[in-house]
Image 1 (cartoon, rainbow, N blue to C red):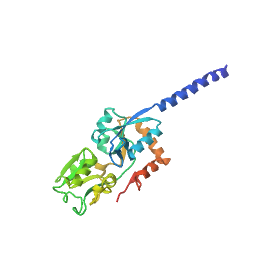
Image 2: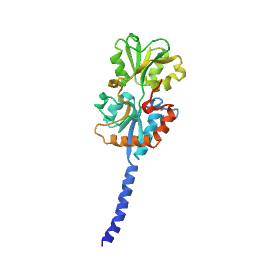
Image 3: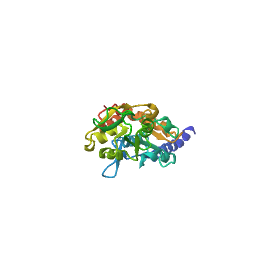
Length: 261
């Protein structure tokens, strides 16, 4: 009789295992990405979004065995859209700050880079408030750079843009005098491009954690257990070499704790 029960239960256990496996494969997640912040994310000529953030998103979705849809969104609408459930997580080079943690939860960092001012070479000796008094400083709207510049360069004019690419355009055209941003996209997305000829970093890096936080993390809604799943997935891709393969595709240095000279 006992043997009969075991034989009867075996197919049921197998069916349950198959069902769980199918459910895992059918899991769907929507990821908010920007698509306008090279080399982390940008829309190519083929209309597809690509970049470091995008490859990280795909790698994490593979670890979670989830089918992910990437949803492009301007950066200043990321947190409101996340809270409104337009997507489940944000992978968009969003710095982990205490201010943002009031609205959303973050995973561990997945990269960290310095913040620098750029301007025409030889125009400014440094990037202090005194030197930039009366000057027009470009920033991407609602970013950590916007908040820092607003609080620090009170005697300058802060010019805000929806996209980082718009900052680059006005800087090259001379409509602003300097721009504050993440050093990595500044270097690869502007200084190494033809439009960036004659421009360079000014002064030392800015790193006040009050403004710049502790690296870029993935944002999820408050209390969402997806945070813990993503942390495990991040640890896995860091450990199995996937992260390094993605990093080496875009950078010649360790972006996890980057120092750009």
